[in-house]
Each structure stands twice: as structure tokens, then as C-alpha cells.
Image 1 (cartoon, rainbow, N blue to C red):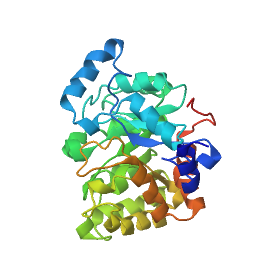
Image 2: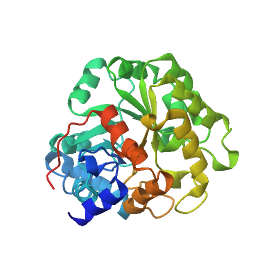
Image 3: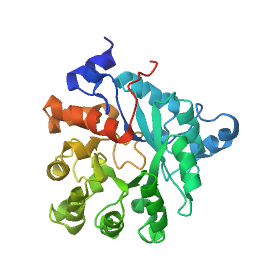
Image 4: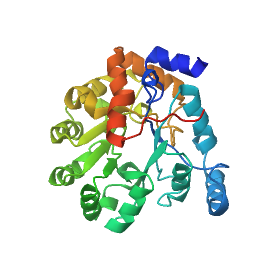
Length: 303
């Protein structure tokens, strides 16, 4: 057994993969760039991003493949970042196409995309659309209601990254449609405002829809403390209490775009063992929930 598999077995998980069960799923915010994607029409785009990104923010497909290999991960969900390529998903689509079914994605999709365009993206391995009011602001999404309705019609996901009270703006849309929702980074609550702040309470109420899932990730984006971000733990517990482990999953946020402090993949995996010492709980976070939601096949990646 290689070192990565030993780590994975010890944790009953490695980076979203319950390796003891072999199949895995990953949620990672990855900036698709560099030599593996910089081929043909993608070369100029990758070179532009490489000129504008900070060193650790650059995550190439080759580098991510090594992360997956080290930690025994077999499947991954890539999230198109607003930084870098923005709405140009072509490099991510190229990477997914060459993954042999091991990668799927969340894209940045124009609000006016019709059903045909969404179906095409779905056929290419895209599972939904990413909204990021922490980057664009709330008003940017004022006319996004039609896209949300079309996502619901095709059983695709709406992924939302909000902070503070921003989620309140989206709750009526979520409740009024049948769209499936992924909440990024625990909703990024304001630590000092406590568990009863309106935005966080709105997040907890969305558990009643049974269509909303939460990614337990991005602690450095809202914590006021260094690793292991203990001031976020009460929020994590409240989320798990409301959504149950069937509605939660771990996410790495690799390669840590706009990270406020140094981040590394391994310690974030180990943090799960601190928060969830029961191997059955870790199996749900690393394996059960993402595999069920993202419908990955039981296939192994060529290491």
C-alpha cells in the first residue's frame, strides 16, 4: 500500500474519497490552467492566466492529478473560478473531456443560456452553475431567476458562494423553484454575529427543502483564527444538525484562490478527523453524499 493509501485508510477518507470503499468524489475549486490545458486553442488563455495569478493559486490539471494520486482520490468535481477565465469554461471542459469520466464540473453560465445550451453543457459533464456574490455582489444576479428555473428543469445544480447576510437574497428563489442547491463554504457566516445571525439561520431553514446541500469547506475565508479554525466549529455542527450528514460534504477549495493565509490540502483532510472522529460520519462526507449527488461511477483512476 503506498503512502497516500495509508493516509487515506487511516482517515477512512482522502480528500473526499472514502478510499476504503475505493470510489471517491471531490469538490475542489480549481483554476484550470497551465501546460495540461494549454494545448491548441487553450494555450493563449492559459498563458494569460499564468501572467495574472499568484504562484500557489495556479493549479494545473497535472498538479491536481498528483493531488488525487497522493490522497487516493478517484473522482472530482471541478468548480470554475470567477478569477482567471471567468465565464470561459473551455479549459475546464477540455480537462473533463480528457479525464475518462473521473471529473465533472460546475460552470459559470450566462443568465440567458437556453435549454439547448444547458443540455450541451450537461452532456459535457457540467452539473450546474456557479453563482458568487462574494465576487460580483448581489445586484449582479438580479436577473438570474430564469436561469435558475432552467437549471431546475434539467435537474442541474445551483452552487452559491455567499458571505455574511447575502444568502437572504437567494432564499425566495430557492424556495420558489425545485432547483437543487450547493451552498459553498458553509455559507461564510460572520463569526462575531453568532449562530443566530439572519443569514445563517436562513441557511439552516433551507434544510427543510431537502434540495439543498452544504460544502463544509473554506474555513479560512470566514474564520478569525488560524488552523484548525476552531471558531468555525459551532457553525459546522449547526449545519450538520440541520442538514444531517446526508446533506453535507467536505470540499478542499484547492488551489485556494484568494486565500487569506497559507493553505495545504493534507491538514484540511486531517481536520475532518478532528471534527468527525466517527469513521461512519467521514464516509458520508467523503463518499456517500458526493457520490449520490454527483452520480460518479465505481471506476478507478489510472494512477
